[in-house]
Image (cartoon, rainbow, N blue to C red; front, side, top):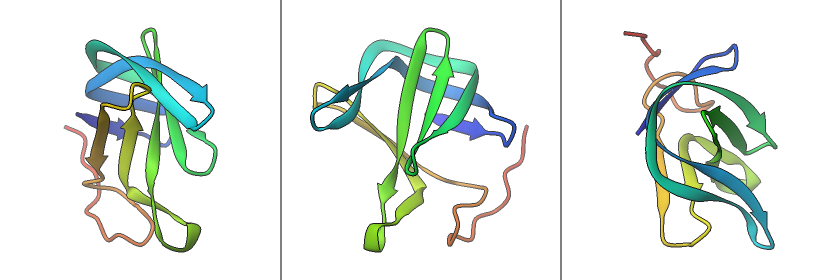
Length: 108
């Protein structure tokens, strides 16, 4: 699974699970489908610690991993299943994650 997030709000996805995010008493999770998607998408920030990615009939939220002292670690993004049995995650491999010194991303 991978995401390429561009500054203009566009994204390119590879094998991202589809579904819809849902607000519950314990937070926000995603009701996943059995389908994965590869192709174009859009993204926006969701609160201070997440991004909402929209593609086809899906809207999913990726969360920044909790950092130290109430901060957020943008070097890793996670999605949490509403059923509680799945967690998807990916590490940031290029670009800027604040304090992480990562190589610049190259579009192929």
